[in-house]
Image (tube, rainbow, N blue to C red; front, side, top):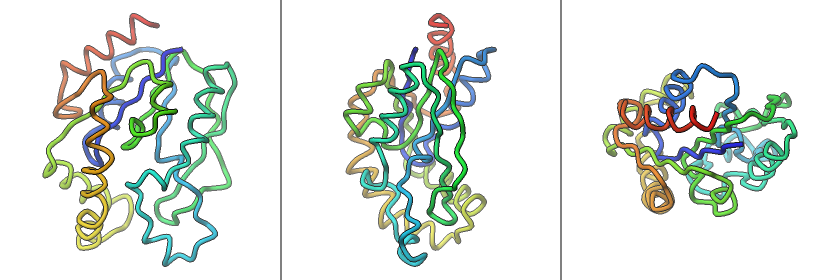
Length: 201
């Protein structure tokens, strides 16, 4: 099994890179795990407290469960991936059954930060984008997908997204084997990654 970790800042284009790699490969032997599915369940907190959660801090994630699930997949066992809602800041009772595949791609902003998780990756990729480009994408995404206002997005960016990026996410770039500038627009990097996976398949 080939396990690939694709990290990068919020709005850097990680998900686009993953989608374009999969589009280039005509195979069902790829499973994708999103770090976002492994945010801690906050159903015990009042809704007012949930809305203050710093999703860009490592403490917001259940790295132990994600690591356990990757080890289970590598051992040939299926997993039940959690479903997390940004609207309620809780996990759904339903899960997604993920079966072992020849290639597993893990994507998320903090996946290169955690050593136990990082050590499971055969290839570590960091998707880089300029801060202003990331902010533009975050504003569009959070308004459409998460029902937030522009002011709320900008406040959150200044209070948590930007400082957490500088403290935790950007420094994790040093662990990457491959750095992909321009995100999903970097056709050369995507072709290189797709060809590498194809050879392994």
